[in-house]
Amino acid sequence: MAPLAHTPTVLIVDDGRVNRAFIRRCLSGHGYRFVEAENGQEALAVLRQQRVDLIILDLMMPVLDGFEVLKALKARPAWRDIPVIVHSSREDTAAIERALAMGCYDYFRKSLPPAEAKVLLPLKARNAIHAKRLLDDANAQKRLLERELQTAGKYQRFLLPKGFSGRGLDITPWYHPHLGVGGDFFDFVPLADERTAFIIADVSGHGVLAAMVAALLKPLFAQYIRDTASPLHTLRRLNHDLTALTVEGDFVTAFVGIYDPLRQVLQYANAGHPPPLLWRQSTACIECLATTGPVLGLLDDEDWQAEAQEVPVAVGDRLLLVTDGVTEARSATQRTALGISGLQQLFAEAIQASAHPLVPWLWQRLQAYAGGRFHDDVAFVAIDFVPPVWCRTLRLDNDPASVPEAVDTVVAALDGYASPAERQAIRLSLREMLMNAIEHGNLAIGYARKREALAAGTFDELVEHRRRQPPYATRKVTLTYRISPSQAVFTVRDEGNGFDWKALLGKSTPPVPETPHGRGILIAQALMDACHYNNKGNAVTLIKALTPSAAGQVPGSPMIPDNAPTSKGEEPPMQATSTIKGNAVVIALSGPA
Image 1 (cartoon, one colour):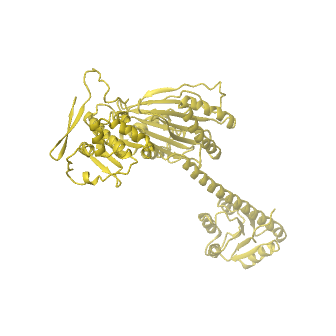
Image 2 (tube, helix red, strand yellow; image 1 turned 180 degrees about the vertical axis):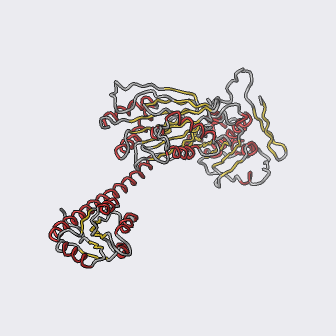
Image 3 (cartoon, helix red, strand yellow; image 1 turned 90 degrees about the vertical axis):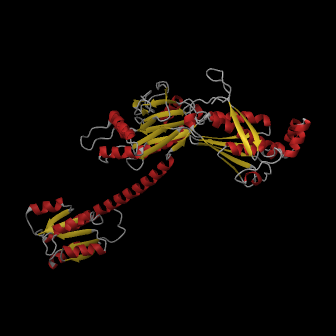
């Protein structure tokens, strides 16, 4: 046995001085330090002041007897694990049984012959102190493990996304590990063409090993879904890796989906995972997205067979993904599992309680159902399909011919968000601002020089000449736009020297110069709800409030350019003209309403 790090302290509690002296003589020479108390009250006072490794306790004492001391010891965590050896003059076994039931480590009777007491008492004391030492070591290891689990749990929660908003999705996750860390995993990965991939997975078992496997899924999923852009092929590659990595008998369930807001479809594959629930706003019904393949990690590549599915979704629909810690949660009263049917009922009730956030409401109801007791990791992800918010950046060369295509791209993205009149106002404003940025900003062609070239019929040659000359040749025009259901924001920035815009926009009623100088700026100011320049004058931000209800399409539907033929093919697009009357620019829009 390794030596103790300190001299053990033995507290002898007995109202008889002779008894205390006898016990002390029996234990002398064994490396102990002694403290004495005449009754239970004094014993508790000693415990409050110093560390004690063993208590030898008389049961029958005045003021506070041994039973009351045992009760006080168990009431305080700091004293609970101190071993107690009871000694008593009582011969009835009931007292000894009661003391043992209250947690004392051992006992001996005072009637024990002195010769036997000198042999047995040191053995009992040594065993009790050794057991206390082992218990202290175990508790220290437990505390260390708990700290490590807390740290690991912190790292794991750092790896898990807090949520995702954009590209037509509003995603809110919830995670409650059973042991601080666990094997539940979810992630969201943006893909090309506005699509978003997401996964929810569950590693068999729980604890550190399951958490390590779950941590491996994050980089693997992100790589495979970007490489393949396919839920099925991603699961197939994950199965190949997990079959080689996991211990025999361990497995992973997973659901992988890709949402395409342009086509408004959800493509998915389900490898043995609890079926997600899809609530459709149009019918107020809940559908189950069933399993399409076996779990991951058990079958070789040739034996793992699955298929992909595709379902339409619409703005306003909601999707709920869970792990089996949710469906296998047991009722606190009847001990029955929640199951898919119970989850459907909870989901329906949560949607009806629309005044409350979905995820916290579901967690509260799940806790109430299980009485706050879960035997597995719990994770769920709520996905709301919302109108997409488009945020894009275009970079244009100094070529006026590139402006119409750039404007068409932006206006096409407005389909489903803006009315025809709003789209035409934006089209005209952007065309004016982009042409200004190229001609007057990047190419530094002044208004007087432009008029001369136009009059001489050499303006195109002037533009081409400037485009090939430094410093104009390397300059770009940047168009950034952000489109939401309520407004569209556009920023046009050139790399020129800027201009004094305050002379045109600094007054409540913009003045109109004697020449067409600045007409494009005034047009944009008249058509848009806000028009702001930066201090330098080489960047302008235009804002237009939108009325999507007038657009006639649901945001996120396939985008059709404004100049595309209608279903009947007979109506031309709207046209816009501008004239100067007095001190105002008058915009006229013509064409179909």
